[in-house]
Length: 226
Image (cartoon, rainbow, N blue to C red; front, side, top):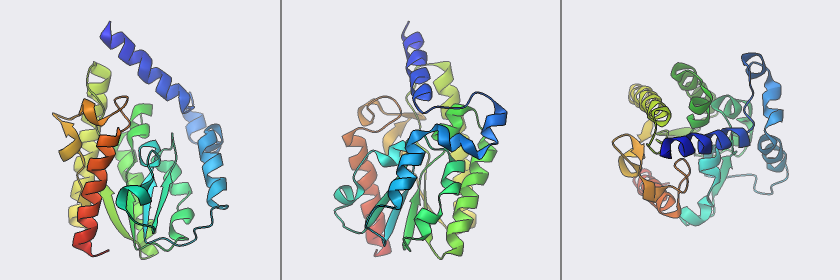
């Protein structure tokens, strides 16, 4: 019975972010018009008055779930997370990152792709393309590990195995290319699943989770003298 409710819960999550139902739609850029969050947020990027930032947080709803200037106790951070977004969506909106001329961009993504059924290699390739594009604009990168989700069903175990595989690729890529890899799962996960106290629903973080995440970033920024 417990597994049944978990499956129903995640079905609701996937429905909420308006996932398309066939591969033909996935290939069409109009997929992003099906996610109202994508349209609203990118329109707002043109309205926001903050035109420069030292730090940009790029991601999906997990990144979008907190005020990063408050968390990091700064006034030079811009958050560019969109609920329900895929890494392919990140690629389509990078101008909203490099137009801010940041010194560093923290990237976290991939969990929506993996829930949807995207191959790990495809997600990895999207993230490397994002990095390559930002590098051409002389923006330093911090790759943040894709977070695990809670355990409790074979479906979630499969997702966590794919998250693990993605993070191995990202960590290897970071090492080869002298990019910082921030392994948040070291603090937020146990046995390859998200610790319950650090999450509100098995995917998104609680205040305790964000506190740990932000502390990791603050310590890194101190080392980098940013």
